[in-house]
Image (tube, rainbow, N blue to C red; front, side, top):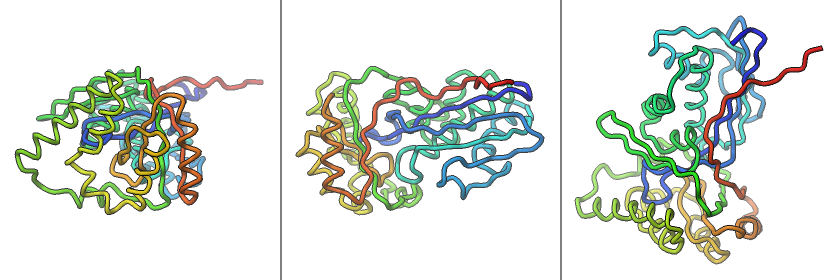
Length: 305
């Protein structure tokens, strides 16, 4: 990268768990964190969207901290950059905003430091920062991802060819992941763990075989997190009931919440989105598509006179 180069890094949002797939199942969606990068004499982060203004404008910015740590692990020192950041991903709403920032930081380090990281190396670093592979894996690989982190070993499979649509219902209230984690139990009884894992296994099989009714049923069988987090989510039951009335085959918390994600068959997304927006006018309702490609880095063409 030279001083005249401008590079773009684009990272998709993600939803995770899909009900019982706790900390292991993720899905990339078409909301994006985008950064424009150019070499500079000092680190500078410019917020191009209003909700990002509260973050540091120097090398204390989270994306920069991630990038520096990754470079340090490879014994590299990054040249300072001017980084313009914009995001369509709502903060603290369960759509992977922090995971996208982690992936952006890793891509930034790889770009500026010429690290030549493989996709799997990026996943290992991202999982180390995030603590689990679902959101970061979806942002890196795109599509539906199923991952496992066990004894510092991370494995993941990405499946891009999915044939359903999603609608998200986003409450105005934030819900920090830390708060949502605090309500979870420390221990599940053995028979509960067996039930919970079997629901997750069957969920994946149902999605991949397009058995939508069964997939929706398994989303409701979650024992890992949703029963404990439902009381934190305004209008959870009302949204779930209405979404099913308008054609959703399944409804689940998006990540830790408070966003709810509604799954519906092809060509019903617009109808479902419109109906839910009318019924819940104080919430933001979005029809989203599945992002199949994951994070992307490219050189921006600049106009020269």
